[in-house]
Length: 144
Length: 148
Image (cartoon, rainbow over all chains, first blue to last red; front, top):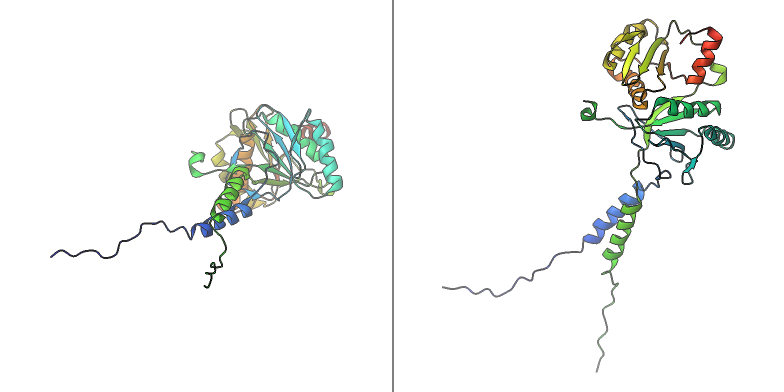
């Protein structure tokens, strides 16, 4: 005996929870949102296993692989400086106005050390109290 | 004849569209930039005790990632084994990292990182790691007579 289906199932995709998921994604992006003040410089960072969190709004001195030095006080977008000696006046200004503010050195891993050394020396001469050497996370694979 | 009232409702059909646009904005503008690194506190002037270099462990980095530790060439992963007995005798033993001007910067970070991992690897914290700049070494050489 044939049984006839009396009701038909309507095909639809439930979209009621989509707004909830999207809001959760927005909350994630809002919380992790971080404006990069030093987007201009293309730097391949050296890798390290030990890493400390750099304070937000720390001043940045970046040196890319073409040895172009850029500075940022952590608030404004970085700008290129002509010589390493300009870092001294920049750092001295930071120390004078915001003592204790750390300065992050963001240097390309393949740079000759003398370039980084010169910049670090300027920072030391300006009496910067804490210097960070920015690194990427070293993994077991990258260690091999 | 009674008029049929419209159902009171808030139109939510476009919320998903608006929020997707917000997501796209945040995805495009967000940057997951590196925000971690190795920190080193610069000694204050008052603390500037002269390091007795004959007692310090000297880590000299040459171009190509050659590590000369106390005038002996050794791989970096042997550095902590080498300094462990010295640190057990003197926990304040200074370690000086010197990098050749032409050596790549990454090798300095490697050496510094290796020493910072001492608590995990050998159970001793190295309290005194020094990375003098070229100018500082020249000053020390001038005042102490060719130490480096």
